[in-house]
Amino acid sequence: MKLSVIIITKNEAANIAECLKSVSFADEFIVVDSGSTDGTVELARALGARVEITPDWPGFGPQKNRALDLATGDWVLSIDADERVTPELAREIQDTLRAPAADCYEIARLSNFCGRDIRHSGWWPDYVLRLFRRGSARFTDAAVHERVVPARGRPLRLAGYFRHYPYDNLDALINKVNRYSSDAAAMMYAKGRRTGVLGALGHGFWTFVRIYLIRRGFLDGRHGLVLAVTAAAGSFFRYAKLMFLAGKKP
Image: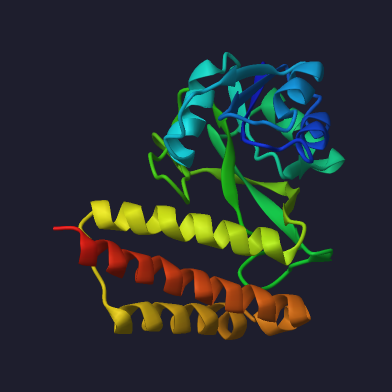
């Protein structure tokens, strides 16, 4: 079975080499880049990836579908630049593809925040559907929080997991919260969603309770507190931005 790895990038020079090295067992590497200026493209090509550069940014879902459409393998593994396939997961994927029992597989992610593996706060095991037979699934067209949707059947789960390094520092997390909240607000506005001050406050408060208390973020120590507060702020900003969008548009 031929395996294609697909990755979307923008300014991922700090991550792309280790990401591609972790999937060196694959047969094909497809990188769709949206205008990197830090050497990401050159690094990816030097490691054997086919790199396509797009002049626009349609959102995460559409961009990943562009990468998917370029894949030629029997199977596709979608991975983000800040993720790594562990040696154990690599062996499991290869063994699975020799005798697949399903068309789609979910893989857990163990995420690291500022040097600490986060095992609570809703971050673990964080299963994502990333391995699938080409033609059996596609990404949603969501601008953010995209996901793979199988055409039929239920996915199975692999025992191995990705290592995930989404934020090197708090600045990176805050910057991402700002970007994602803007995209999410625009997406909600386009779907006819509206809210007010109480709605924004309520969503922010509930997000903190869900992550820090219900999902036991307090067990992740100070890292869990920061994650809960930041997620709550992101939720508040998302709905506050929606409120202001509705206020200035007819």
